[in-house]
Each structure stands twice: as C-alpha cells, then as structure tokens.
Image 1 (tube, rainbow, N blue to C red):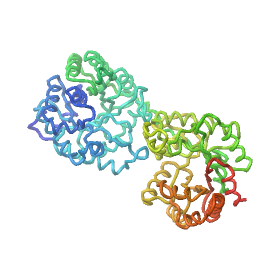
Image 2 (image 1 turned 45 degrees about the vertical axis):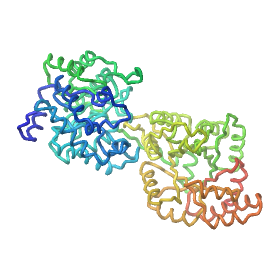
Image 3 (image 1 turned 135 degrees about the horizontal axis):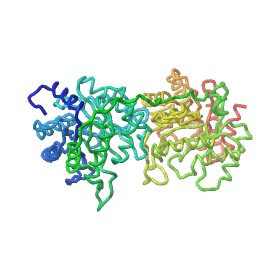
Image 4 (image 1 turned 90 degrees about the vertical axis):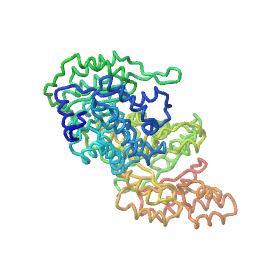
Length: 620
C-alpha cells in the first residue's frame, strides 16, 4: 500500500489507519497450500521457492476478497524448523522471496506482514534451546523480512509468553518503529498449554513493546470470543483475533475445517463489537471466509474502544516454598548434614507386590532412610512406580524416592500427575528424562518427551512456589524435595556439566549419581560442581560377576568401570568370590568418598536385599 511513499510513512500509516478503522487480515496459508494438493509432510515455507506462482495466487485471492493485510508464507521459516526438512541454509532466501512474492501480489493494495511463528524446539528450561540461541534464530528470520521490505511483523501461534517476548524484542532492536502484532494461542480449555489465561496474556503483553496484541489459531471463534471479552478490559492496546474455522475433521483422509464463511463472519462482527481492532482467519479459513468478513466489516461503523478499567490480575503470585528440612524426613536429614542411606528397589513386572513389600520392610528394619523406586528403568515393563511408592508409604511406613520421567506423558498429563502425587503424600522426587522405548520390552512403543528432565524440574519448582507453568496460583504450594540425576564419569564432561548446571538453576535440590566405579573421576566431578553447593548422593552398585562389570563398562554409556576394578573382578575364580569382591569394592568406594557426599544410594542386584545391606554394613 502507498508504494511511492517511504517505508517509514508506510509503517506510520498502518498504525494511523488502525486508530480509526478495523483492519482485515487474510486467512490461512498452510491449509490453502494443503487444499491445493500438497501433503502435510511437505515444508510449506519452501513452497514459496518451488511454486511462487501458487503462493502469489493465494495472496491475490485474499486481496480480491477484501484483505487489508496479507502475511508472507514464512510462518515456519526459521532455521530451527527448516532444519527438519533440510532447508536451514535457505532461511534468508525463503523469507526474502516470501516478501517479494507478497509484494508482487499486493500491487499497492495491501500491507505486507512478515509472518513469524515459534521454534520447533521449546525454550529452556522446558526445552533445549537457550535464550541466546533463540535470539539468533529469530534475528536471522526477522532481519531478512525487514530487509526485504515488510510493512509490519506478526508473531503468531505462540504457546509460551517467554518465547514470544524474544522475537518481539529482536524486531524492535532491528527497527524500533516497525509495527509488531504479538499473538498467543489457546487450548480448548481457554488457556495456553503453559497455563496462561487470557487475562495474564493481556496484562503481560500490555507491558511489552508490541503495538497490537491478540490471539490466533488452535480453537474456533466461539472460544476466541470468550477470551477476547476477558482481554479487552485489561489493555489500551489494539486487540487482534484470528480464529481457526473450527476444529478439523477427517474426511476421506483429509483434514477438513467445518465452520462456514457465514459463521466465521458473524463471529467477526461480535469480535468487533466487543472491541477487537484487527480481524483475520487462521487454519481452515480461505478467501471465501475473508470475503464474508469483509462484508460485515463494511456494514458496521468502526468504533473506538472505551477506556478500559485496569483491573489487572496479579501475575505469578509466588509464595515462599516449604523449607527443605520440613519437606520429608529424608530432606530433613540432608538439610541437617546427616548422612543418608537409600536402596534402589525395582518394581515388579506383574501385580504381585508381596516380595517388594517384604523387602521394603526389611530395609525399614535396618534403618534405611528411603527406598529409591525407578520408573520403567531401561524402558522395561514394570508396575508403575507411583503406585508402589504409595503402597510403601501406607503399608510399610518407609519414605520412597519416586523416579518420574518425561517419557510417557505429555505436559498436561505431567502437571496432572504432579498435583496428584503431592496429594497422596509422596515428597521425594527424582525427575529424569527417561530411557527411550527402543531399548526396552516394547521398542515400537511411542515416547512423548514433550519436555526433558530440566523441564520437569522447572515445573516442580514452580509448583513448590505455588504456581503452575502459566503463573496461575495452584493454592497451597507442593512440598517436593526435587532431585536430579547426574553422571560423574560421562563421555563428554563439558556437556554433562552444562546440563547439570541447568538442572540446578531450574530448581534441583539434591542429585543422585550413576553408579561410581572410578573414585578418581568422581572426585574430579565433585571439584567441578563445588560452586553449585548441592547435596550429592552417590550411586553404588555391588558388582556380582566379571560379566556384570563388562556389561556395565561396555553397554551402558552412562557408566565407566575403572581398569583397576575390572582387574579385581577378572581375578576372581568363582561366583561367590566375585560377589564378595563386588561387595568389598562397593564398601571401599563408600569409605573413600563418604566425607564428600550427603549419602549413598545402593542398588540391589537380582532383587536380593542382602547385597545392599552387606554393602552398608561398612557405615555401622
């Protein structure tokens, strides 16, 4: 629009026009590409390079339908997402050509918005991408869009406010006066997947540098209307809303969106009436939807939103967490510098808990502080660790350390589990990523891994402060004593240290190591983590045979058995001698390191309780 005027004036005129008018965006781009014959496993952003005429045609149809703004076909054109399809090296080219194709279609009749979506991987600490890496990824894409001449930037379909703020800041750093629309997406429950309510979204984005704030994608217009109604009274900034055409249905193998153009247009009228200033469509909306919306917008008088009352919700109202020493007996001992003893007990493969319960009672009788319960170790089929932990609390009276993994449930399920685990009285947690199914009993089983161990720790830490991932109060804070796993003898020490430091930053309060078979490496590890000031519980495994030692050393990448120990095990001449040697090595290991650690966690080979008890006699 206004092709002969300067870029600065173009930007000013978009915001000036918005002051007294409703601005209509285009509809879905990905679903239009899909409807025109491209399969869902295709890189849709790269279609701009392969079939620019197709993208231009879609743009042109939206403009002819009445769109004031068209978005570049660049929603997923950041190198993190493009890498999946082998297009990472074409990031800048895809974004620049996306702008050029849109400009050719616009021909002075529409503004061009550079579309920017979230990364494929999650932002740390929930995911693996650090903030600086994220900034670089967004800077490359947004810089290409601005250099190519977009009139504004639209950030859309973000689940995480923290991630959204990064490209918003980047856009303003690159060009401070570039208009930016910042949009979150909601689940059917009316919140983001991180638990952000529409009110929190409105409050936080109101304080940001965004020029327009709003919502798009995932849900249909009815859910969007309810959310917009909650937002309009909490901000003076223009609100944008771009719903899907309802929820998709499978018809003859294709995803079909069922909301009609008339239905979408009717809700667009309602969006405007409650105060929205920017209207558009997302997945499933097409030029016919935009044409009907345009008719409605032209039929009503644009009205300015009345000054809103500033009844802001309190955001992220954190409470003081329960002190460590009050969380559990186990935590109390560690907080007071007393040496703790734990024994690992693997859940049974079936439903009979008789032996597990009997073993736990023997451990309690011998003053073992906790029973450490793995969660599907080596991805084997075992009774759920949570259930066995609850049985030990109720029937044995011994505290468990519950392993909980990110392998088997999505984030919604994880949060639900953590709330429930608190309610049934389990306090000591070891939060780990989990072994992949391919190494276990059912290699074709599907893993989830929505988050990793760092993300799990971060969620639990927030709950210990009385809030969920979206900053919403959960009432009484949880009382988790949060543990992390760590490998003191990894293949790549620098990578392990960086990962462990992130766990501590996320909220880990103690750590349990992989089995130690090299004291020198363990002491080196302790020197490296001295600055973290976190209690370390050393894993100890009584070897039972030379084959056991060889397996540990050669087939478990997280375990290193020293040559000295290997020689001792190879020198044994019978099964009994090997077992006694393994117990003695474990005892010697404990005595060499006990002054540097908070406690030990001893494994139970073959499920025989006499092994860990014999090892622990050295501490009597």
